[in-house]
Image (cartoon, rainbow over all chains, first blue to last red):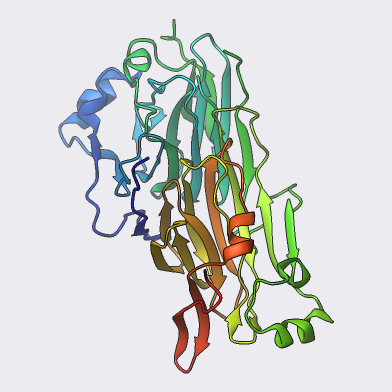
Length: 189
Length: 189
């Protein structure tokens, strides 16, 4: 069995970055075409095409049975009534779980199975979210500052974005009179 | 494939506890008989038998391919010249890695293989420590306040404490004139 080397990294709590680490993902609004309900609001905002979120990866050890580590930083903002959010994904390796640990900001995580089970958990500093295998997951910034969380997942998990792109999540998180509200997604099928 | 449920927990940054979660491990000095070099200092302190560290586990999902999550809180203190530390362990499943993420305090992590590879990394707020499979790991509080870190490891990893109990780590972390120093363990074989 090959021997892999320990890795050291340094996370900055202020902005969620990891030292000497470029973002592996930078999603602009335009990358989420078709993800928001309000197409007119989406098109209007597309002129500025703001960054919705970034993902910073810790250097990987290279192990097949290893774990990957990263941070996500979701900017605050709204498209129509929907808050800025991630695409959301299943894992290609269905049984692969994931752990999220919120460092700052306020948000919501939607955790859903392909056949309609749906869980929503509030995210705030200190919340730990365990996502078992077979559950898709999307995070949403419902606050006024960046939502920053730490994540750990199996190196062999992979990402399946397609199922979410086609079908959406059963739940939407929208801005209501008194803050975020969960509603049924009218486009979900 | 069985469907497991998402889990939510809340970590308190101030003391490293997890809401509604009793420690799964509370190690007193007496539990580390034979781990420190200075037997006289050890025996003298044994009268008070202080707690060296506690581990708080997040509720497990129950998945065989799942991840476990917890926090460790190591108290500040010294036995002879050696700082309070954990027993340290290998994983029973050799290939199983682990991730540590330091939340507060100051310390050191020793990462060593059975055949003499040795790495030491400083721990402070924001440091992320990736421990590949086959590397034993021990954490040491070199500061004046509790050392608190967040950890994630595969549910099937298991713990092998025996090899460390018998052999020790190749490296000791001792209090020097200007702070912690790494020295060779004279008892290591």
